[in-house]
Length: 395
Image 1 (cartoon, rainbow, N blue to C red):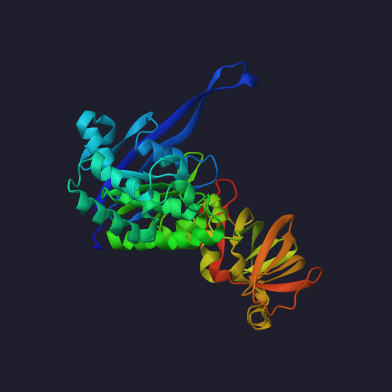
Image 2 (cartoon, one colour; image 1 turned 90 degrees about the vertical axis):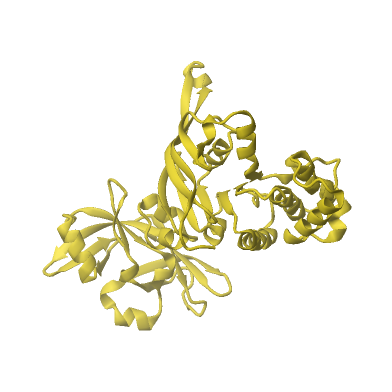
């Protein structure tokens, strides 16, 4: 795949409003803004994750692209044409190039047809391969590509597990060689082990076909492991579009900071105080000294003697004595409420100013519930946000 980014689909000012009636308001119609002025370029060959909380508009985004929902405003340019202006044969052709894989594959698979017939059907309907032997050969190739065994060809959807049904649905979509796959929470109905397996299968398919995938999910792990880039939505509005690593390391606001990562980033109100040449953050009875570069940025931006939101990820808090002794100006005290051992790591839960916080530490830690311990903060990984706007000030 070329390193040059070629825009395959351009989404501009996409807006979708739903009219709903509320009995509480006397049955008067209310306008729900499911998507609000969404603009993003989708590059050829990438996997674009679309992620957000329930009700944020991510599924509406996908369904509006393929016109399962009619857009209120905006345009989607694909193949040099505005999808929303196409009609008849042109629209049919464009839709052939965008294939959707649904959340529940069972509902999209005809229970009366075998897996082989379900995958073969698009080849017949769209007259892609006329020769029966060639069609059967292509079906068997596709089944292998999506991780199904040849003996599955004569089985019906009800005879498959959830993961196998999802593979059939993917094979049915892939067989038409679409330019774009739109996957709407395709793994959400699977158990944890199957989700991991299917993530690997999707990555293999993407690498093999070098096609473009729009992957809608509420699961940040799926988005981060599969996505070349990720769109983070909140209330129908794009918060940030970036690579998974940049979203994690350089969130643009408090929402993205708290949404990306598990356990989530610790977000604590802190007062910025200048003491001589030093600048410190004061919170929950703790005082930590800021590195010179971060301190200077806060001074220049006029944040001295104001309250900001301090963000620190759980893995950037450490109870190692070596680290604590090496950086005594960056140490806090915490009384442990809960201890969780996860094998390779331990989560320590504690409170600061009634904010629930987490530290991810080495499993050799001796800390246990009820203990008051010291935790060193990696100040190079500190994030600071404006308390009023919740936009990032510095990383």
